[in-house]
Image (cartoon, rainbow, N blue to C red; front, side, top):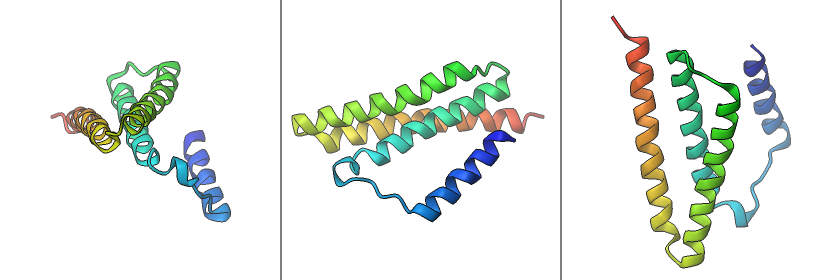
Length: 110
């Protein structure tokens, strides 16, 4: 219940204050969102499997976002930012779809 209230409060604050992302960070935001979604779907799957650990979830969430942003940053520095961004999205997308498939199997088990 607390998580739902926090989500509603966060959305309300976002609507009221209309935050903007600095121009220098805009290339990293989509990658960070995809990395965060990977951690969220992994956490949901772990909860349904009965092996969820909140400390591991927080560490996974933060480290996924930081590592994905670091990979994209290094790609930008090497001049191959778009290729590495695409690679990160593909890898995390495969993980997300795998977790969603596990969630679906768990929910629709006969």
